[in-house]
Length: 245
Image (cartoon, rainbow, N blue to C red; front, side, top):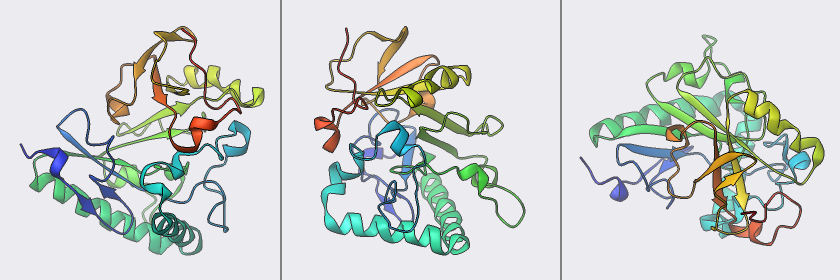
């Protein structure tokens, strides 16, 4: 099998091998991620509908890693504007890029996985092609996965799409969705102040979400612990949770 850590692949919408976290873990998969300008940063729309309620727009990981560079931010803004201003052209390109990525993975003997919401929270299941299919239906043999703050997304019928709900204590009105997310049988991602994760959080076992990025392989009924990164290191809103052993 090809060494996944050496594989890189880029396109106009998604890319693989450039994120240190996605090359960790199970060597059978290679993940391609799409990064857009989160929340209202593009100036033409809102890609994170729950951001203000969860108060995650300021500590967003958009400015962590390669996101600190101006050229990266400009590229994400251009992509977001493309998405809002010419949706059909954008989606047509995305379909082409996912197909190309699939072939790249086949050639290199790895299984493709795709995260469309690297720094956004789009309901991709609502975007249909000319035949009435969403992207998960167009590519049933590809595993898609994302983090989301939208607890009631209707995606259970898509067996190739896995969602992990993102927790926040910054707003009581958002925090109550925790119970709804659990009812929906979603694992819960919690951003902790440091990597000294508690053994349990809210009565669920905590696993190390920084060990790899393959959330669809996580055991059910888990809290996915993530260490605060970028601006989140200084967050005091309640989005970042102080470790409680």
